[in-house]
Length: 251
Length: 367
Image 1 (tube, chains in turn purple, yellow):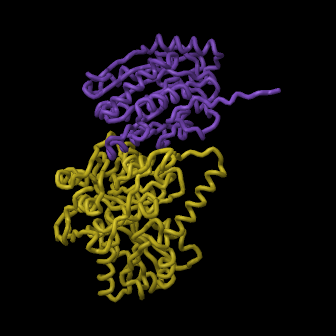
Image 2: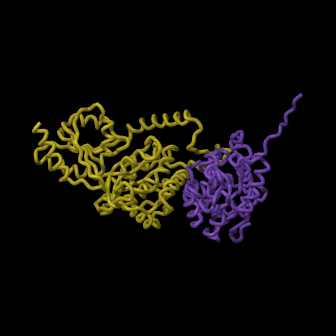
Image 3: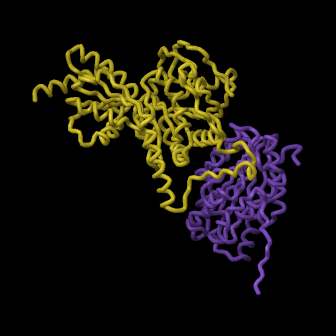
């Protein structure tokens, strides 16, 4: 006799139960990041104040992932859409979700200027060191020596520069009295949750938050579980996981 | 709610850019997002100067890409928001305008044309006609009003908001640097005094009600998985666009009823054409003007009717026939011959038109 477990999946209230099976590739980091974000929103009870925006690239697959008012935008343009919302409707907890390409290449001018003005929103950059959706090209955060479709012999920093350090860049220009800037990793979701909650709390108080999350892309990396994990550890050596800027009094 | 500055009819002597800012306030616009580019800057300047009195909002963004997308954000938040741009700014704002087109966002933008292509001049042109109507990687599901003076700037800026929010197609007021920088007398009024009610601007994001209790979460997107899914959506847009066109299309005729030589011009060039028509009539030449006010959608039937009656057509523009191409497509099958007077990026004077029409008439007589 076959018995089935009648156990419902552990979904956050901020997750859309109707979305069905994950649209992300097996082993992708986006699901972990988004679920952790959703649970953080639940814990802080920000569901009614939140507006979620997603970019182009793999992050666009999150357009209906959240049980939140959501808008999918153009490549690199999530940040201006969301600060357009929060400027027009103060009190909104705006979340702009994008990859490393959307954040640091095509949308870099918005990243820099939103940080400089310390706009009232949370920018999340899921950094998997390549362009996933388009087939694994080099991104600004591709690590030295890393093979991608456009660096098939490994990224040569002499030719294509060093990997971009988003959190360091943002921390250098954001207003320290308004901002929370951190880098976290999908290797420690409990820590990621703490980071998200601080970041969201700061935004709910009118501040600017930036969280870079080191993530994984086994499909384009062509890595099995073990090698994926090893790559993530290498990333954590290249990109320091820590809080870079914490507004005074932010718990 | 913003405070209205104009509560009774007020005659003023203003630059066109100032008029646009006053018109946006009269329309109860709540937020402007903008980036500096000549010749539209004074729209922002005036809007900002008036902020303490209007209690509206403004954000100077990092570029026109951002101005376009943050305007979309403001609109989705339920604000009567707008932006303004010109030339190369209009080019890079196509990214946002294309998203507004796909998502039926009531995007409102004043375009003050300057010379092109590229940086060209900061002064004047009619070379953004095609771009404003058909920019982006789509089908041109847009509404474009072309103005011919300061009263138009006031009237059509107010109207643009209502058209955009009523029909949910991005709506543009297409003017130019001459209109933006020139001073003219204009009557500012409260739209309510003309029986104009502003369309409501419901929020798409953070609408009233609790998610999961009163309503479902809103999930807005512009990407589709299947070709057929996209086509089905766009086919419906076309149906909506055609239905809207009949209600929205506008044109202006000047002494066109018995015109043997019909001038077709839009925007400020149509003003020169009116002067020319009067001069030509004084010389015994039956000239007339057809001026499309909505250059997208065009008022096709009135255009065809007036073209049918004329003996010869003159298209004149401060561009190389951008409007003419749009009109000629709609005039398919008609046999009225036409000539052109195109000055790329340069103003067309009444004298230019008079001389051209006189030479046309001479040729007609000698045939």
